[in-house]
Length: 461
Image (tube, rainbow, N blue to C red; front, side):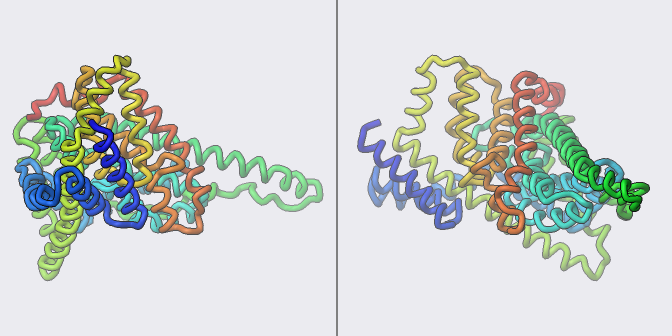
């Protein structure tokens, strides 16, 4: 790559970051920066040709039909109140545990993230509601910030995951195996997040008890009443929500129809997505009174179209930008430079994963995967790593980047929705969850079977 080409690449990257800084849409920023780069490299005619051909070539892949189908399935499930049924079940089961309200809010954020495929959108939607519920239960806003910001990242691993689907599309790995591979790491993440919440709540109670102890001793000395004797623990003794067993059962049916058929090899990922969308549609009709059928379906389809359009706009923009990088030779030069450096494979893996963290300041998870996966996947596969295992690791770290101080985008989105929290308290609440994520990533590297076992024993195509 010549000095002039290198200068163009750097200038285009600066332009891209500048467009993001003025809050230009990420997909349009990628497209505009890529087009400028193509003009500088090959002229206006090449840029016009790219503008007319690239959107179609990017979006016309048959495997991409899984994205609107999974989105439609999720939106139908939400409008059928199935997500609410799952959240109410979690609230009822967990409410007596330390931090039960926070644990239920974590499950709610995970369910919403699985529907939208966007951690950032989940934080923006759930921030106010979850924060109010958690603070009413007697917990601090730091815990609420950590739960909401980290909870939004759960949907990228537990299927159906739009981010894993996109990773499979851009790297040509098996989408069905990627979806199954996310189950183990997703459950491990949920477990460690739950442990983190419990430890934070217990630590907070100990601090409050230590602070209250001198006051109690002073009151006892003068014969005053104790403020804590016989008092119930603050926060978690709230009325149990109504249990919607039918909704929980329907939710399980949709999961089995969409993911179970992939595991059994009965259907491809695309076919399973269509089965899931159809079953969710039927369930929506069953759970909606006849006069409201048309409105429920209309609202669901409208919402699904909006989410699909947003995802495909990101894909088209990333396609133009990736084409510019390929045209400039930057992507090939990067792969060759890393492979020729003769570094230990795991050192290269860690370096590549660390490169994702700064991107969390500017991009959401979908955008990061669309931009970074085409560059990192060939490098790491060249070192002999399994593509499915890599996909889960890269997606996990990409979402982790959204909550990593001081650049986590989720923290800034939460701050916009809950301005009284303040970035300082938000990041202090997030740090324990970042530590939990680091533990998850370390365990996945040390024990790759957590990722690969389910795909290996399945019949996924």
